[in-house]
Image (tube, rainbow, N blue to C red):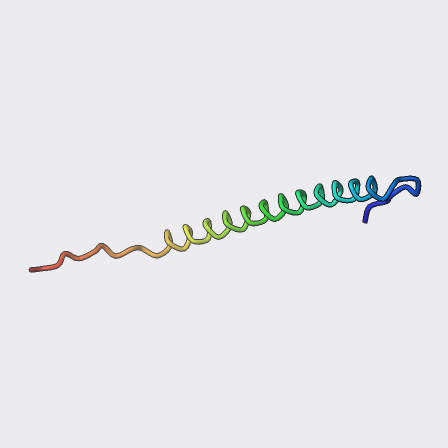
Length: 64
């Protein structure tokens, strides 16, 4: 919660509070983006390791 000096007007206090909330929202958004990217990279690495461990059978040709 923002610390608002007592001598500020309501409008100025509201403007300050909104600016602080916007700043916090941007920090939260960036943290969420970084967490999602890290999770995606981890899952991709796991998938690639799993695919490398199990050989893929060559597709057979269909006879007509």
